[in-house]
Amino acid sequence: MTFDLSEEQRAFQQTARGFAAAEMAPHAAEWDENGTFPVDALRKAAALGFAGIYVGEAFGGSALARRDAAVIFEELAAACPSTAAYISIHNMASWMIDRFGDAAQRRRWLPKLMTMAHFASYCLTEPGAGSDAAALATRAVRDGDHYVLDGTKAFISGGSVSDVYVCMVRTGGAGADGISCLVVEKGAPGLSFGKREKKMGWNSQPTAAVIFEGCRVPVANRIGKEGEGFRIAMKGLDGGRLNIAACSLGGARACLEAARAHMLERRQFGQRLADFQALQFRLADMATELEAARLMVHRAAAKLDAGDADATVFCAMAKRFATDTGFQVANEALQLHGGYGYIRDYPVERIVRDLRVHQILEGTNEVMRVIIARALLKE
Image 1 (cartoon, rainbow, N blue to C red):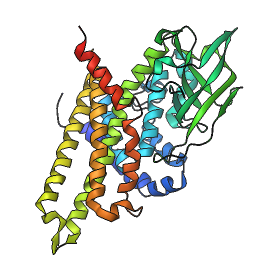
Image 2 (image 1 turned 120 degrees about the vertical axis):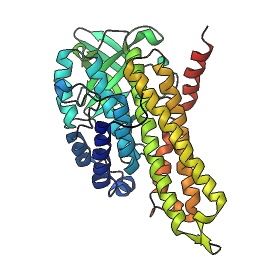
Image 3 (image 1 turned 90 degrees about the horizontal axis):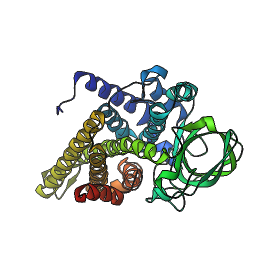
């Protein structure tokens, strides 16, 4: 692993930064305020290859590496963490189809997902199965050439607006081995959605329950074999954790830059905030922690690309550290803004609200510690 970005990665970075500045940052506050799902901006992002960053080229993906994706998501999230995070989820669901689906499935779904003519969601969490994902209860019973689904998925990003739902369902007995992966398409008989959740942040993407009531899904929509769903879900989450960690880096970096600018301008007690050594030290610590988090994310991405056996553990470490650090840096930036940080005329409070959930989703940071501890204590 090299620490400096390659010339190609710098090009990806500049493209993503330019897009974020032109198409996301000017509208992010409005999207947040009005709960707008920015379809046009998302499709413009897809036109740059951001809908399938690490999906293969055969059906329109960009076929980039995970570290490339981390660089891109950091830049997008510096403008709007909520929208960048939805792009991450769309990428994760699309990659699962590309990686584990057969040729017919890839040909059927990926072209429209790569242009974001269709949007994708990932459905694992349930009202009674959050951190304990292997306890999920949504049942899929075989009926000829269909499965009949009954159950509910909770807190689904893109719920009600997505066209493709990559769902983990129980086709067998209890535990992880009884879980399979099915693609459920919008409009399937028996598919409905709950109310749009009112959230602290992530307001540019709708979140809703996905409800199955005798929902008929063709057997041809199963990704992989019966019983392979949990493994597929966890493989998807390795990348998803890196992406959301990178989104935390981007949001926190934007807050750090805003705090620096505010300290250079704001005067109290006859001098700039930047002239108070106590505040200098706080800014220095914020920058140091953020740089450490970035290095962890990039190292985990390199391990995932290399297929290293310990990649899952390093992804968990990076997700835990970067999302905790990202929120702490953003929250410190708000404090350095004083009262101005708390009002919506400044972007810091929005980013703080958006980054808070990163410590919960894609596996809570407590579950990340479980993954790490199990690896450390394995005999």
